[in-house]
Length: 374
Image (tube, rainbow, N blue to C red; front, side, top):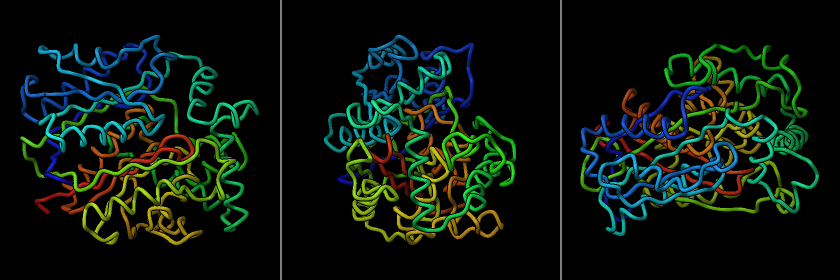
């Protein structure tokens, strides 16, 4: 980073089904919580960056920058960032760029989705906007289908079993049991995952992150110090369609963003002890820990087997991840950064990482967070 940027405050709503709350309500709740945690006045916010994907479809609402700005008494400048499920991390990256340029000193980054207002088929169709409208959508495939194909190929190449894959969701659910903001706080056995209804072979219902409502807010600042510093902010992109890639069992955008993030932070991969990764589907979690470089190709499941046995070599998705926390798509990237920071402070760890992507790894954002008091 060209200068120190601190996570000066953060706020979350609980993720879940909020029938009685509007998109505006969720945004206001998260922003208010972030300001409260920072001890800052609303008037100190120079800029608001909003992450959202589905408001036009699910809530009949555009103009989210102005909507977010109206939550503040001085109506600060505001803009919207969209990168499908990676919108949150791209919004954080945008805020870092403003802060590094000196155009702002304190930025509120706000991610929010109100997904349960729309019928399930409408949400599934809207989410396909993160795939290729010409190469993917005409086939009728949805994202469970895309990741089902990825799962089948991975199992074929690396002999991953159905029983092994079920450990991923079991670990995430166990991690979420103490998280008051999680959509699901119930323990889930690997056997229950394997026995859940088939969605897209090999993926079953409990392999899939849920449709959720929620919001997350981060205050990034060069003017207000805190124990948590953004050590790196990097993004990378790939093709929208998996049909244009040489392999579907790895996401090159993750590898590229991770390589650049380590270089920017000036640290080794082994310095990172806590990771919040984008487990939209359980197979994605296995691939992600390999692409991030914490496991060799075909061996990502070993990290989860170690965690399930009670002796993790890396703290992965201690919040519960997308699977148990829920996945209000544009809020996820911010929630990951917040949860990584919580774990760094709770466990007195120096470095953690938030990994967020949109589509099938088409847009990836990685943020490395440093606990300067560890």
